[in-house]
Length: 259
Image 1 (cartoon, rainbow, N blue to C red):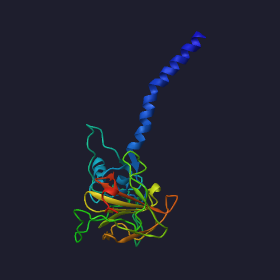
Image 2: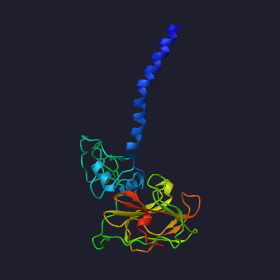
Image 3: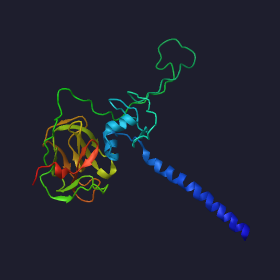
Image 4: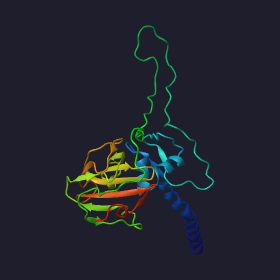
């Protein structure tokens, strides 16, 4: 019995010493993000609550910020003392394999085995020089109804914006002039989502749409219809509306005109 008790104590001590390492390994999984087709730095920054320029800096990515599906990105600030990543201006492209087989005479379709190049996906829309983004957005309500179903909360990660009531198919309008930097359904919790960049500080987001009426790169005027209200990713028709300042969610009711 004494021998058995000694063995059990030793095993417990061993497991106790390994537990912190196991927990750290599990937490480390949240430090990186695997790029999915259609994602951009804007949508990834939106998902994790960081400015897209920060994520680009942490990963050594320069404009036009092209990404590859399957690429692994750091999505939290690096530890102090960590060497900066090697800066690159575009995603890596695999080089063709060397020429194989004997030379042949006459016309031929392929003389060598080539490895197809990796095409960059989801580059950020190219900035147009003929349209200037506003320095100070003039905010307006994105839907006719001003009935707020759920308010913003700093302490609740699930309430990064406000939910506005409405009916399926109701027009959704741009809250300010800007440029569409994301339009799609890659962020599951947001359904059909549109993100508009208004200037170097502000983004706005419009989620749970039934139909998108704009695409990435479109320049949008304030009040322009950009989508139809729906319930994609939600239990009822509504508009989930967010404003981000330097990548961080802020309370939209502090920016929208008073009722």
